[in-house]
Length: 244
Ligand SMILES: C[S@@+](CC[C@H](N)C(=O)[O-])C[C@H]1O[C@@H](n2cnc3c(N)ncnc32)[C@H](O)[C@@H]1O
Image 1: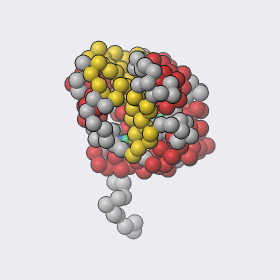
Image 2: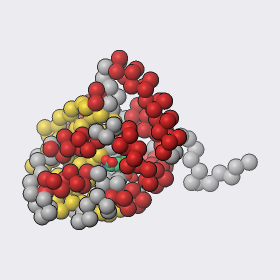
Image 3: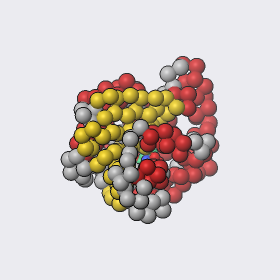
């Protein structure tokens, strides 16, 4: 019989909560880091950088600003932010998964990359001019706490943007998407790596807060002027808000 240890997952990763979710998510991203960028390009039909540019434009970044990309992963937001800050800007990338961060080094060699948790951001109050999170909020064990932390590190008057997967609002598109998603993710799982990781994408999106719940969480964390916009027929949603 298989020996159980405290590290042995007791349920699928998409059902994990709290510390177990944090540990399993980190383990999963460590495993898929080598193939993450390729998978992202395939899954988004190479549209993900266009979506990032749309999201980054909501931040109102000025040349020379300090921008935090939280859950930065392999750092694909960094070149987009650099195009706004110029070389005089300061880019900070924070993620709790070292193998993902190791890939981010190649995206902007001047960015400062650090290990850290979205629920306990290793920065002082009012430290940055903008915060982005790309496909990260869905993975954190306490989204309300992460929103409060983001609000804490932002300077007053500055903005936060998050882009993530969403369930389409139209039931017709939701059905069509789920019919396509399951075989497509299965194919990707086989082609690129871990089957579990791609099932996690689908399952965690289905269990994720709704657009309205995410906006409410941002407002409770102290953001004002909270808005959201669907992309890709509602399979992607961008939320943004301002710290008063
Ligand atoms: C789907 S990837 C997205 C990476 C990147 N932002 C992008 O847009 O491609 C999610 C990232 O969030 C990170 N992450 C998940 N939970 C986190 C947490 N609680 N604190 C810090 N990073 C976290 C993972 O390690 C992973 O690199």
